Length: 411
Ligand code: NAD
Image (cartoon, rainbow, N blue to C red; front, side, top):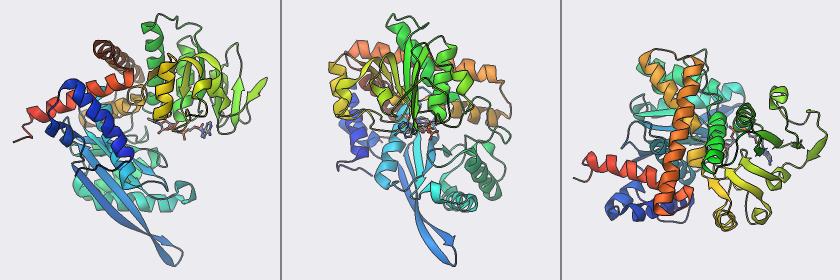
């Protein structure tokens, strides 16, 4: 199916078209890569008291050119088909960029996860799995957690899948470590962000030791990014969450606050607003909370040399343009936060081999692969004289197009 309307999916496809132009791809190939292979929409009846609510669920499979489709399942009230298409295609580009043998997919249910009981959540996940089992499987399409779902949800998904298809733990990733999950998967996205921050500093001849870092977000991505930045010798001078931010120019000891669920109850000399962290003077800024936080209203006040996109799409298109004019170097989300899907690949491969890696091996593999992905994107940006975001799409689209043509999909 192809879609031309102005939308989140159309925005991603603009980057695909730009990469196609740089690579000199055939128009038909670009068209194929801008379409989704399969879209399944389901209705999920949910018991509510003595009545029934009917939710809408999705699974969009964008591409299988480079391997089984891979992507999370999101429970959020704003989930719609266009969003799921955009996110599914971003997974194709992310998996190709970091060179893991997956394609791209995404799933979701339009529901406010914060208003669900645990039993309702389990019922929805099981129903979603039953309705989609024919398109899922460890060599077809492998879901993972996303907004509103977690390791526990993936355990229910795996269990439902096993009832229908038999034992196959690699059918889903992001599972609890105690149930075929992988040690290291939880920290993988944040760790990857920190490794990319270090690689960016090195590439730009800035000393990693003592480089200053400001981070928005103290959730899964932000807190692990902060911890690993500190371990690598950087100085985290500010961090914020939805409750506000804390600042210490001498460097915050992230280890000592790591166990706090939020920053609200952390002792600090200086407090700032949740968004103020974005405009502090620092070497590295890591937005790791929400999308669209760097926009027309604050782009001209950014005081960082480098921005590493921990969150998905934290910078609007207009702000991205303005920041590049100001000379700020931006490492795009599809590279910077790809440690999560890299970790999912490690979990999948361990499940298939029925063999567990020690945590150290997981970390070593992740660190090496993140760094080499960065070096490659950097080299491509120099070769074509383009920004890192465009270069990342050139690498990813080039790899998928090559696989697509080699498969003979045009005949
Ligand atoms: P999370 O829910 O664990 O944490 C989000 C954090 O953002 C929390 O600390 C929250 O307090 C904070 N926050 C919310 N609103 C805020 C505001 N207005 N100002 C400042 N902070 C605010 O989420 P996460 O898993 O860490 O994901 C963060 C981002 O990274 C999202 O954009 C997500 O799509 C993206 N991402 C996550 C992963 C992953 O593996 N978790 C992988 C790739 C991309």
